[in-house]
Amino acid sequence: MPSGSTSSYAIAQGDLGASRLELLTQLTWQYSLRFLRKQISLEGKQCLEPGCGTGAISAHLLKLLGNEGRLTAFDIDPASIAQAKQNIPDPRAEFKIQNLSAITPDDSEKYDIIYCRFILEHIPDPVDVIHRLRSLLKAGGLLIAEDIDTRGFFCSPDNEYFQQFAELVGSAISVRGGNPRLGPRLPAIFQDAGFIDLDVEVVLKLIIYGCPFSFISFFSFLFLSFLKQH
Ligand SMILES: C[S@@+](CC[C@H](N)C(=O)[O-])C[C@H]1O[C@@H](n2cnc3c(N)ncnc32)[C@H](O)[C@@H]1O
Image (cartoon, rainbow, N blue to C red; front, side):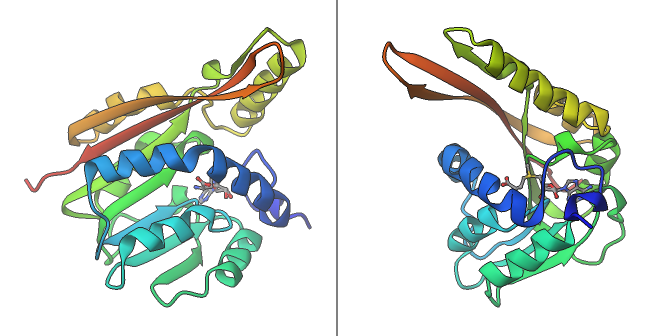
């Protein structure tokens, strides 16, 4: 049975998804890192990473967490978690199988940072999940989310195949109950969930290729919120 059958997730997971996630990391991690560093030092922090896939980002987070930091990372896909455990045998990291939509608010573990990267767009109930993630944060903790808006996928000169690709990505996510345009909605959803001190950054990642000069853009939406003690 293919590992993708375990969830409503629209794209290949496990072994098939690993190289795609590596490429995504290569293309976008520098922007995520810049954003994280602007906001906070992760040194010594307790971090939760929902939707970690095969651990491409987990490995980077562990470098930032230092010797005293801890990472709990989970994914709905058992094959991805098996691969993450194999790739990252680090005593500071715990990888587990968990559905983000089923996360419980009364979980005893509390975190300094919850980092949701390219996952909320895939789940049918992001508003509800964001409310529940808030209860897993320590006082003053941060929820950081990065999500796409497929309207930001474009290329120049126009190319009908690229256009079809962009539309297919969007409809594959929508058909499974996700929202391929979630990114720009995040600030309002976070505010509604009671987060304060919001910070938003928009990244247009351009891939320049060919002669004459051509480019492809992938739009990534970065959003951060501080939750202060009430
Ligand atoms: C686009 S990948 C992002 C992986 C990683 N966060 C990154 O930035 O490279 C989305 C991941 O979310 C996982 N996922 C999808 N729906 C999920 C759910 N309901 N609960 C937990 N993980 C889920 C998928 O299996 C996949 O590994």
